[in-house]
Length: 198
Image (tube, rainbow, N blue to C red; front, side, top):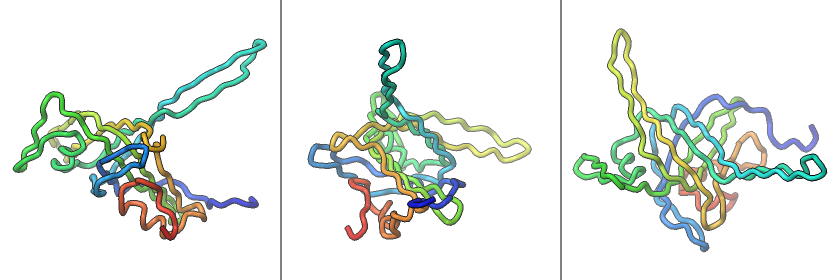
């Protein structure tokens, strides 16, 4: 097809889940702390929140519109380290002990991950401003076989105050995304998307 900039690539995995704490989000811009590894990722489910509206006239629909207002992420990972869990959920961590107190408030964070694809391609994702919900744990004993227990955390993302952005999304199947941008993607927090030569 003439003018096609993306080659065929299909998603086959998820890896390299990372996060960073949002430090400031004001009209002048958004800043983040250091990017940290989260845990070996198993699955990500994203559900968009929508504002919808339908306008009727002369007995038929004249307008039907939907706008995204947020994104809910359910992230399944092997096991979130205790010190990272404390940061993500806003708990106290000291001397190897995590303390949960009623009323603890999770900070806003950004979460990124990579989606390997066929043909040597990959998608790169940053979700920019979300708060984690306290999450449940389900552990079970081993019987005839070993049963692994994993962590699942729900994070609700909202638009940033500085620019209204929710997510950055790149795909190496698209010829316009440069190797330089890919290399920079997870080096720092996603204040702005990486640009060539910047």
